[in-house]
Length: 120
Image 1 (cartoon, rainbow, N blue to C red):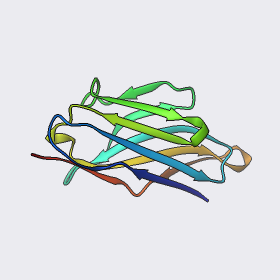
Image 2 (tube, helix red, strand yellow; image 1 turned 120 degrees about the vertical axis):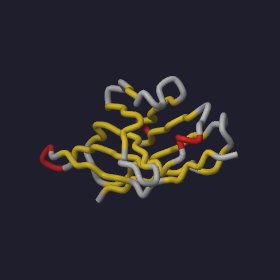
Image 3 (spheres, rainbow, N blue to C red; image 1 turned 180 degrees about the vertical axis):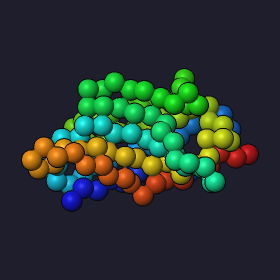
């Protein structure tokens, strides 16, 4: 079994910052990618930031230049540092982990989400 747990959400004023964390635990051979998604009320879930095991990050245009994804492989943890937050960043943020398990099979696991609210 694999567990994905996010933390770090909260309420912040426009222009503020938050750092989200996502920890992956359980039985797996490797973590191949860890991504951050978000879903605002009434909208589709969208990819915000992506990082492969090789460490190459990519970002949605909506957060590029304001957000940084980083990874601590020793702790099976990925972070999303978000700066200059805007009201439109308000959403539930989800972590998705792609892991390799037995016999080389790849699996996708989601966390339960963490709420980010940007409001004055």
